[in-house]
Image (tube, rainbow, N blue to C red; front, side, top):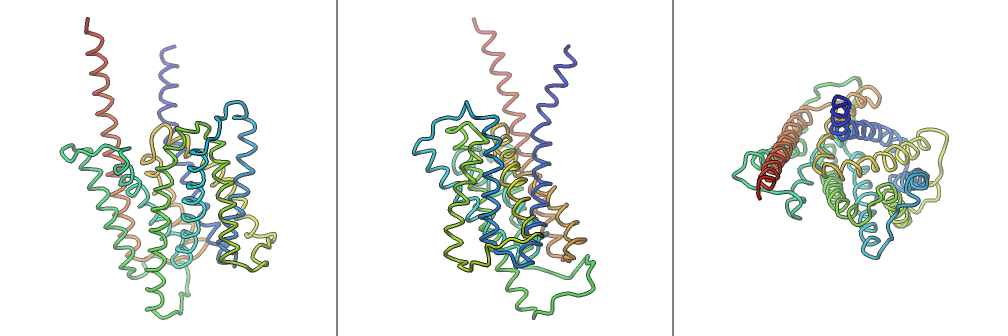
Length: 348
């Protein structure tokens, strides 16, 4: 009996890790599918609208099955949070991500996304969701990891370097100055996307406490995002032909993004955030980066540059320093809590 209970506890402790790895794999597929559809001429604004509309339909079915009877009442405060979530995630984060990936590559965009944990940590500290004591080794690891990650991102932006790995015999004929300009422009757009994603995670923590129905929250966020993105599309892309779908990657991309990413994956992330916090969720992004780099080489024939590899290594190192510091902090808090509980038990 005790062995069975112990195995259940191990499974419960392992669940956030497996869910986070699964989410990273889904995001890897999202990068590749999105890049192919954009290369085929699909509007990035329309892709955001369709993907979130499909994500809304996906989560609506799940919410109807599992949360029909236990949804909290929506207040004006909750509605305001959902409006901002839709703005931060679908509108700003996704649109700038697609634009930045268009100027760079899917592997580069995925590697830059590993800045999200460091940005999330900084925002979490500013909003007092994370503790920071520079005299503790856990805080020193988190600070050091954040600085190393940003150093890696800087290298990726300012230094492209020679091609290290490429499976394509032909490369871009654009002038080098134009390529470098596009690379920097794409990098800056990806930084905006990452910061918006980090802010999304932070606000999600607060919102899920007010509205404790993760599937319904995902549904409402997708709905709000689809509406806001549709308004944005009418402003920036007025061509009626942009809305036309065909039986190819232009149809597969919004279905995959809507079901697997904006529907299932965001719901999974919400569950993990409830248990382990926003920094933990974003710490598994390197898994997706490795998958994207391999798939990008074989499917998209994207070259890996020296600057991207060096920068990604530093970002990975910084990321795991942050994760190590976070785990060390959690272990110390658990020890302190146990000691405190024992102290209370021995009091008369």
